[in-house]
Length: 218
Image 1 (tube, rainbow, N blue to C red):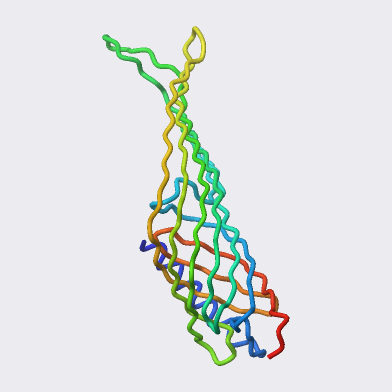
Image 2: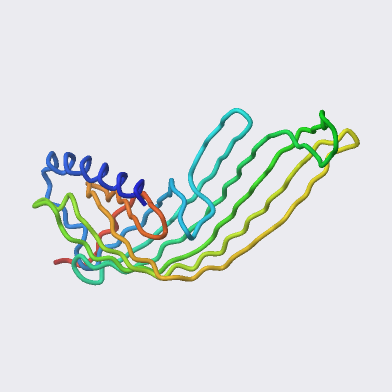
C-alpha cells in the first residue's frame, strides 16, 4: 500500500505542474459526455495474481501484462457510471539445483526449474465522482466504488532434469472472487482526453482515456 501512495503523490505533483501551463478550460465532466480508455497495473493486489512486469535476472525471469479496458458515461456533471474489464497473464521461472533425499557426504543434484503461470479475467461495474482541483479543470480528484468479479487460475510446474529424462510435477488452482472495491484517484485533463491513476484493493491502475463528447447542445 505504501508503494501505491508514493506513486499517487508522484503523479499528483507532476500533474499539478502540467495543469499550471494549460490554458483551455475543459468541460470533460459535463452530463452526457463519455470516455473510453485502456489501463494497466504495475503492482500486485489481493484480487489478481497477474501484473505488468518485465524482470530478467541470473537464474530467474518474470513477464506479465494486466490490461483494463474501460467505458464510462457522465449521468450528471462530475458523476460517472461505467464498467471496467480485466485481462492478465503472468509467468515466472526460477532455476536451481535439486537435491533428492539421500544419505552421504556428497549427495547428487540435478538441474531444476520452477515455472508459475497466472491468468486473470474479470469485470467491475463502477461509479465515480470528480472534485475539481484547478480553475481550468485540468486536474481533478475522484472517489470510486464498484463490485468487481474476478476469475483467476494458477498453474505450477516443478521441472527436474534427471539423467534418465525430464520429470514434471504440476498442480493447478483456480478461484472466483466477488468483493466490494472502494478507492480514489487523480485525473489530468487534456485536449483529447485524460490520464488517470486509481488506487484501491484492486491495486494501482494507470489509464489513458479518450473523450467522447455528447452531441447535445448546451
